[in-house]
Length: 370
Image (cartoon, rainbow, N blue to C red; front, side, top):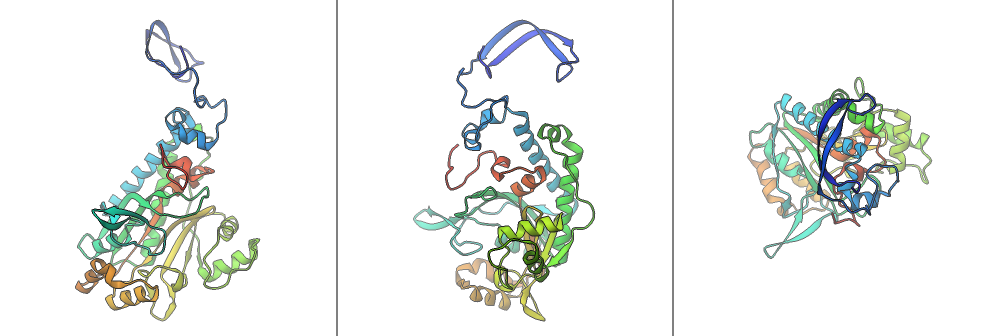
């Protein structure tokens, strides 16, 4: 019988301490009901290593490895725990459109599609729809769903279809939003530590659950510290985004999850509110794992006139977003929220080398099948 064939075995179950389950079956009969090809494209036992591309081409076989299956069992537990946390926070789960007429973030990272003779796009983010809910009476909402970004990046942490964990709450500010992000991450780690002992053992992961509050650095402090510890081609100056190298060096220096707050307004999206006493600074924040960014969020601009100004400052035509901006004329409460990379959360938790290892069927620049 070839390896990986599907068989029905009848016999006596006997104790056997050397068996992984503590028992073995002494067969009386064996029936092959689905024979496997003797020439397998990869070794499900894991004794012969395979490139990630080969594994992804043959994902069904790959998932027969205990350590691969364990990743997705952990991922399922993370999503279960996140949902439970949001429900404890009195949040309503929503499902927003993934086909839209305009991009959420603007720019070129859009997948265009033909929609009954009209141009449409795959949604980059549920951001604008979350904010519409803030004005609807659903005061706290969350979503776990796909996002699509036509990024040219071909790196171990970028894909073109990803899972976003999103949160939005009314009568909340950026401080409240950061507190919820911290709670969600901590609860996810604690749930995996409690319920995924077998999976962590299969992966050889000694999971460290973060403790206490995550430290906070202002953008100015982050730039100064990154310049001090990172080997950068050119020093960062005010107004620069944090490069991958800067993020990694900063993460190594901090050594735990940390927030970066008070970003320059010019590099945060139009919907992030600025400080009234210093409009050059925004109430935006990022939450980073030592390896990479996990969360981006902030307090939103709820004042109609200021929101329209933000569109114009970033070169976006407000009239194309009328479905969004008009709602702000009818009484929009202050609100705040964030989006978290679901795969990045799992990737960093399990110390995976590539985000594709945390996705059943990844979509990137080269991969559209399976």
